[in-house]
Image (cartoon, rainbow, N blue to C red):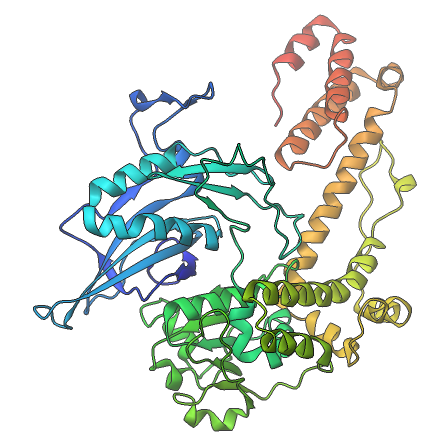
Length: 543
C-alpha cells in the first residue's frame, strides 16, 4: 500500500501502503532506524574514493524505517516533518485470542521522499517476511545494505543488493514517456548475478486499477485534469492507494498539482476539514476504506466506489455512473457517483480495444501499455496548444540587450489563447470530439493550470536570464570599461559575480562554456583596475 503526506504515517499523510495500517510506534523495541545523525568518527570510504558519513547512502533512498504496532485507542501516531513523504507498508496480521481484537497486527514501513512505488514495494516483499521472523538485527542488516547503494541519479541503471538479492533498476528522468521500459539490457553474462529486474520503479498497474471503471476512464481523466474533489472508496488500503496513484498518473506527463492521499483515515489532521459540510470540498483525491466515510463524505461531488480488484486476467463487472441522490446505497453498491457531465465525447475506440483484450485474455501489463498510451496521447493533445501559446509569450531573442535587464514575458490572456484553438487546437492531434473550449475554460481555473503555468513561467524567466548572460559574455567588456568610470566598473564586476551566483543557484540553462567565459571576463576586468581595487574585488564574495 502507498501513502503520501507530511512525513510519517500520522495526520496529513500522503502515502503508498501495502495493507491497512493504523498504529502507534512500538514502545518496547527500537521503533525507528533513522537515516541521519552519526558521529564524525563514523566516516568511512564507500569504495568509490569518496568519504561518507554513516547513513549518508541510506539517506539518499530512505528517510527512515518504522515499525508500527496497532493501537485501538491511539491510531497511528508517528511524528512528522513539515514536508511530504511517501510511506510504503507491509502489514502482518496473525490471530491471537489473548488480544482485544483477536489479532496481532504490525506493519513495517519505509518512509522516503522518492515516489518509487513499485520499487519500494518490491524491497518490502524481500525483507519484511524475514524481519517478522528475525526481528531488529535483520532489519539493521538490511538498512546497512541500503546505506551502501549508489545515489539514485536520474537516468542511471543500478544494481542494488539487499539481503542476498540483487535488483536491477533504472532511475526515471523527467523526459521519460509514461509506460515505456527504460531498462538497458546488458549481456547475459553480466546479468548472471541479477535476481530481480524491475522495468519500472514508480508506475502502478494502471489497467488493473481502472479495470472496474474503464468504460468511464475518459471522464475520470477529465476530473483529475480539472483538479476536482474525488473520493475512492475501496475494500482495502492497497486497492485504495493503487487506484488513487493510478488516477494521479493518468494525466502524465502533466503534473498533478493538487493534494492526494492514497490512504486517508479518521486519524488524519484534515479529517474534520474534509468531512465538514459548511464549506466546499477541497481539490484533493482521497483514498479511503473505512465504511464510516460512506456517510461522512456523501457531500463530495465525485465518488468512486469499487469492489475487490480482481487478480491479473480476471475482469470485474463494470460499474455504472450514478446520480449523487443515490448515495444512500453507497456503502453497498459499487459505482461512480457524480452529476458531472463530461466535456468530451466518449472515445469508443479505446473501449473496444480494451474489451477485445479482455476477450482475448491479453495480459494486464499489455492492457496497461495501451491505456497509458491512450492517456498520454489525450493529455498531449490537450497540453500542446497551451505549450504553443505560452511559447509565444517569450520575447524575441533580438530584444535581449546585455546592458538592459532581461525583457518581461507577455501576459497570459485567456481569450487570446482561446482564439488560437480554432486553427491550432487539439483537433490537429486527437480524434475525440466535444466541447474542448469548455474544458480549457474550466482547466484555466484549476490548481493544475496554476501549478503548470507557474512552472513554465519560471522556466522561461530562467531561459531569459540565461540568454542575457550569454549576451553579456559575447560583449567586449574590456572595451566597455575604457569608456566608463572606476565606480561603474566596480559595479559591473559585482553584478557579474551575482550573475554567476544566480546561474549556479538556479541552475540556469546556459551553454557549457558560458560560465567559464564569464569568469574569464571578471578576472580580466579586475586585473585592469588599480591594485588596491583588485585586492578588494578579489576578496569580495558574491552577495
